[in-house]
Amino acid sequence: MRIIVNDTNILIDLANLNLLDYFLKLEFEFHTNDFIINELTDTEQKEKIEKIINDKQLIVAETKSEEYTAIIELQTKNLSFEDCSIWYYAQKVNGILLTGDARLRKTVEKSGIEVRGILFIFDKLVECNIIDTHTAVEKLKELISFNHRLPKTEVEKRFALWRQEEE
Image 1: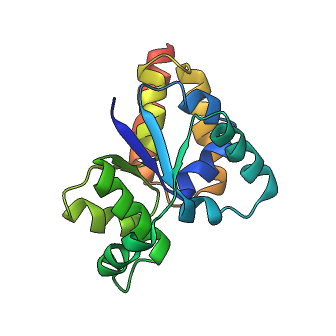
Image 2: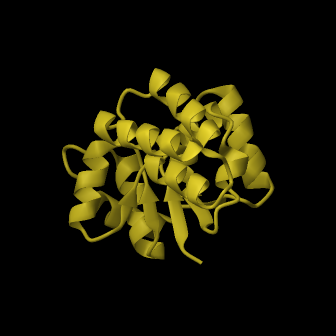
């Protein structure tokens, strides 16, 4: 089973959309690390994510002291230590990195690691019949109301495709 390595922004968006339970139905093993969990500051989001950790649906890797050097070596002026820690972890477990951070995505892709974003999750949820296209459209509309980083062209493609499938 492929491993999905989650960045903070993905977990936050899924928690805000109340899609965590649906996300976890996908045929992946879900991971993140301690630095990513420590970035969560909103109490409600943190409670939702802690629940899936306690239910052993999200594996949180504890960064070992000997891994700090490797993480620091990845660091560039554009990426935080936390960004590099999740990049390092995705590399370590040969996982797919899920992030909404464009700088992180571009840098990690250059290193040969597969990187996906929240639209990949929506595609998979619809493809696997975990949510229907109507729900996908509604949740994506909700997402773009607070997440302005999404590529507009890609969002519009999905709206058109899913509306066509509804007809």
